Amino acid sequence: MKKVLPLSLIVTLIMSLFFVADGGVAASKNEQYVQTVAHRGASGYAPENTMAAFEKAVKMKSDYIEIDVQQTKDGELIVIHDTSVERTTDGSGKVKDLTLEELKQLDAGSWFGEEFIGEKLPTLAEVLDAYRGKSGILIELKSPSLYPGIEEKVAAELTKRNMDKPNNNKIILQSFDHESVETFHSILPSVPTGVLVSYTMSDNNLRDVSRFADYVNPGKWLITSDYVDRIHDNGMLAQTWTVRDEESVEPLIQAGVDGIITDYPDYVNRR
Image (tube, rainbow, N blue to C red):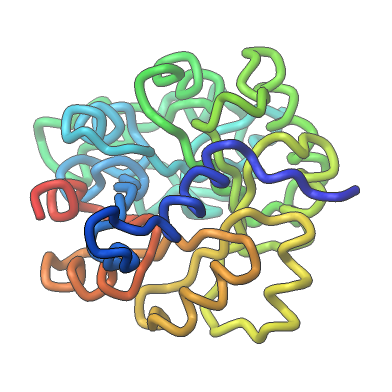
């Protein structure tokens, strides 16, 4: 199936080629609008992947909140990063071995600070219902090979809420598992998708993933102007991860990235 770029991507690409009227020279890269993506919410200020972190991100005027989605033992979609619950909750065990009811009993906030005691792990449905129309949502499928069919389930949740429309421009789905991204694209081709990468992709690789991806999202240590230009030349955008220091922001903007995924949304928004 031939990929059709969503309107928001077309507009952004056109903006990147915009010529200023008085001088006839291309606008510099640092004049381009760079999207702020709150990594697991504003996770520098509140426990990651909780409603507290998402609320903080919205208050900080993030363009997107980024969330990690996995599947429970009883087939529900839950928002958590690790495949086990030990690091970010008071429980133990693998996400895939616990039911939604068991996961909902866990405290997902006290590890971060006393003021977050009692924070719960949200479901994908809860996040979509709470933030549709308030923030863009970047959904990462975390270890999708553990959860056969998770792409269809995520697609169903979006379709149920009419969040699969091409003029929505507020949902992106990404994963390090590029086969999973391609599968999702085949189900909902109108929803923008991205491939996460921890290596510099060749031109052949970029051409290949451009069949089903709208974004190539590299680790920030990989970002150079040349790499970003090659991503753009293949009709895709670049959001980079994960910024945790304010000094990294300006060099990434100068390199031409389209979005910065960060634990601290205010580092980008106050530049």
